[in-house]
Length: 141
Image (cartoon, rainbow, N blue to C red; front, side, top):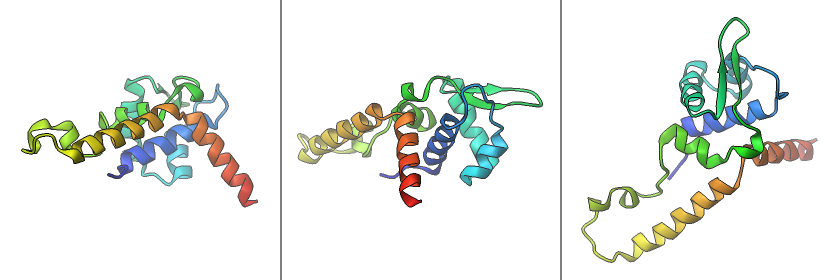
């Protein structure tokens, strides 16, 4: 199980928006450039995030994006699942008929791991990631 580039870029982009003043509309080109993300790919990701209200799209000459809600109210789970759908660490947790084993002990283990991972994604917000990023940057100085 790995994050896809879309999930990674989506999180980077939303964290970048969280670091901007609340009333600022940030151009997609700026997010793309500062985060090292291809702009067309980021546009598709942000289109999905704006449909869900996680980010707000602003059209026009001075268009761009802003957060749809305060950073401390956007969970990492919401971002990940908006980009790729429900998160499953193994196919057998998503597609029941993929395995012919009955009472599989591995399946139970994976269910527990899945629940723990989803709990971490749900408990942590964009504000947490921004805080960690700033702390890491301050420690490098």
